[in-house]
Image (tube, rainbow, N blue to C red; front, side, top):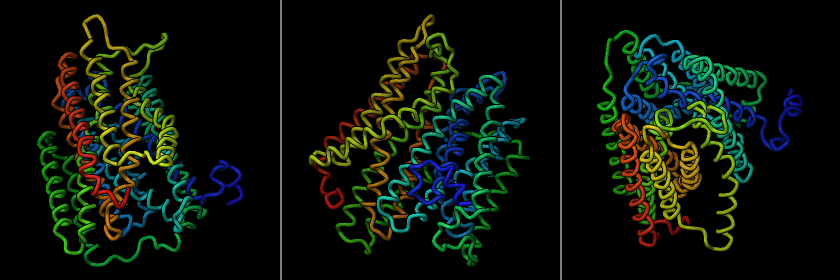
Length: 495
């Protein structure tokens, strides 16, 4: 069987563990379903004919809450993979939950049931995302270049799925309706599940776990935590199924925000006051704190393509190019397309600059990424301000906006992930990744609040709000550039 798999595996994967191809294809299908669903989520919620006719600001808040909670729960999903289910089985269960969630979105008769579908997708993402990366690392216990290359291939798989998803799901939604689009996303998950189960049956994945046990006996504390989590999940499901409730999204966002802020303040205080950390290690934590705030600001901007940018595309953008009418959801594919095109360039650029001793400090790279984000918001602000009753914004504005955002993403995310592992002491690296996911969750939450506060009834008003936040990003970038030399000692041992 391994000979058959090798025959149909791309040649650049032949030097890698066969399970890498399985995980990469699982991620392609998962990202296809996820980004395809995201591309039409807000559009469906505000649609008066097929959707729930929600106000644009409310729908944007729902979108922000969904993103925030998905990343917040990934910490617990990783714990379940490590302690309870085993990483591989956590991936499989996560994929099944995402499939169920998309089917619920497709056939939901009322808004509460639709929220139930989103809840299942959140649960699935929380299990699948952290554990699939863990499994890939298990394939390469020796570390080194092979593991680095494996994660580069995996990153390409993520963006291939993210590129295809809006085209497939958005195209189906345009022709057969939004609910058919959600069903299409679910079918994508089914295909991913089938190939994963097949690989598990023939041992392609489990052969690479290096003797790691899947599903060990649970201790009393672990059983108690599992019991509480299961009870909370059941309570939320019953509430959404049977309670006649009206969810006040802004209050939920504020509540979660306070909770996350409490966690962040508490954890950084613990690190700074800990007697287990040396003075040098506490300086590194100070550097991590700067990156933490930079990441929050960046992810606030990165949350907008599916919400405020998507609604601007729907309401105020001309969508005919060279005589072809472009579905609104297809614009969400521009970012992953640019990511695939430009990642090799930025990879070459950093290596080239580093060879010449001119590689910018990490804070300067964060400042540059936030400046690109400011440029994106300034461009869409100018586009919105120029919309008149007889003239919509050109779609080429959006191409430029997503190009600028992609530059910011490629600059900040890989370097941010790398420096988290460098700045945290070895015994705290796992917790450092948790802090990174916490910054992502807070950024998406603030993005939901920002998008939910916009006035979508007026392009001029949207333009002012886009330009205002562009100013915030620009000022923040200038501040970061100004303190590069001042904070350089915090990173001196890891740059």
